[in-house]
Amino acid sequence: MKQTIPVVGMACASCSANIEKKLNSLPGISHAAVSLAGRSALVDFNPEKISLETMKKEINGIGYDLVIEKDRSVEEIQKRTYTILVRKTILSWVLSIVGMTVNMHWISLGGSNMSNQAGLLIALANMVFCGGRFYQTAIRQLCHGTANMDTLVALSTAIAFVFSVWNTFWGDTSLTYFDSCGMIITFVLTGRLLEEKAKDSTAKSIRQLMGMAPKTAHIIEDGEVREVPISTIDVGDILEVRPGEKVPVDGEVISAESFMTADAAYVDESMITGEPTPAEKKKGAKVLAGTIPSQGKFRMRARQVGENTALAHIIRMVQEAEGSKAPVQRIVDKAVMVFVPTVTALALITLLMWLWLGGLTLLPKAIVSAVTVLVIACPCAMGLATPTALMVGIGKAAEQHILIKDATALERMRKVNVLVTDKTGTLTIPNQKVDFTKADNLPLEEREKLKPYASIAMEELQQRGIEVWMMSGDKEEAAKYWAEKAGIKHYQSKCIPQDKENIVRKLKAEGKTVAMIGDGINDTQALALADVSIAIGTGTDIAMDVAQVTLMTDDLRALPFSFSLSKKTTHMIWENLFWAFIYNIICIPLAAGVLYLFYNNPPLQLTPMWGSALMAFSSVSVVLNSLRLKLIKN
Image 1 (cartoon, rainbow, N blue to C red):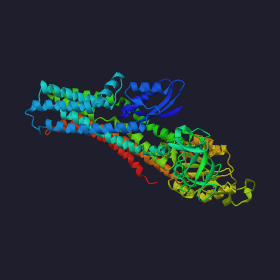
Image 2: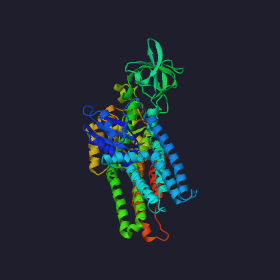
Image 3: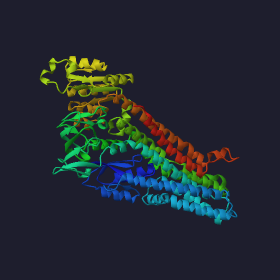
Image 4: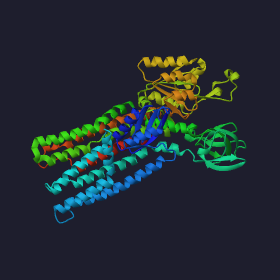
């Protein structure tokens, strides 16, 4: 079974990589993917071989936590963690500013010895009370043979602090870096604070979906109406839904009334289907959790509750999609796993090179350079480059009633140059009131009608260079008529499922990237074979299970929008990765002191303090850049 589990305590890409590695090493887990941006783990496991409690225990052992308890609110945990982070960041800024004024002798304390000792105490307070978690995590990681961003922060500040303590009591009192120790902690905390705020924005869409689920329901028992928690509703319970209330679970209407119609209520289903007009609901009609009666009230019998409702299914699909990894992310993950050890080795090489060039006289320069290398290197930007863009992209799609199952589908959609589409139920809406025994004698427009904006959508696709093929089981006359009506040049009539599969296979053999869209069981063969499979949300469950993308709306303009979103999201991923790698490629040599070799009068070199500021900025900039996807027009 697959389950998305919230993860607490991740701070960088190395954290998510370590958790993922640990989960995948456990017997009973076939696959686990951890999303730093989504703060969650998507785990495919066998509950007979491993329990959630065992997973939690193993992850606790390496310094993180899985939220598996139903009575623990992930939102409350995140709020509390964020509040603590805000307080620590503010305190760290206060201590760093005070420490800097002391170390810069802006406040006279009667000599360098007193200033250094005061700076020592201030830096120690900053490191313990504000940055204590860095050292705890680093020690825990070391015990398990792993490392992350906290390791680099802990190592760099500890080296600078010990070197400064030595000089304060036994060495050159002018060579102390207590202010840098404090500012490193401050800048890293500030970066994480801004990063958390930005990441919170990327998860807005899933929170909106989860917010659609009501917390209580009105149940009818023994003729009385009582308000009860949603968790107590069982299949078969009779519920009452009033105007403006959210439908609590999926079910079937047993009675309805409104001032407009004596036997019907009108329900706003736009949050699920995207249709702006409220749907009429009479006895026997299906209603979905999260939808809202805009006119009238009704009573219903619960049919699907809890995790089995359509809304829960949508939320689960979006969570799994946001937790999935694009192919490029797997390459980045491998780089992140060796990043911290590599940077530590580079810092050691930097230290030794400076000592080799100038001996012990350059020891202060060697230590400062090594510390700056440790501080400035940032795996976070690389780790966040892909998942943040994917989260925003998939969330943006969900807002437009486009459900994308996984990151691979989103990335692949940009390559599509042929769309194969079914007709009935996909391009057209059949008239349910028509007597099918007499349908052949009726005009085509009476049998079915073209979906709203279908012709506009097909025109947009073809303008983008996407060739459209319509495959219909209908007669030649009908197929030709609706193809022309929709503006489609290529069509085939009297198709059986094998014909649809054959055209997809033929187009793929020609080297084309094929998307297939359909709504019925007869489309599943072609959907399974296509490079990108798209189902209509009003179609069969089988088609939706096979498909990688589901359109929950009849507005087919969602198709060109989804292809455009794919292109922009993928472009954003590569843009983020480019800047993340370029940042490290440029900044690590600068931190090592390359400029000092060419411009040493005055000396040009990054200090640990500014190195930490740049590191914090690199992570935040990647997340903020990804948020630009929210500006894409619908």
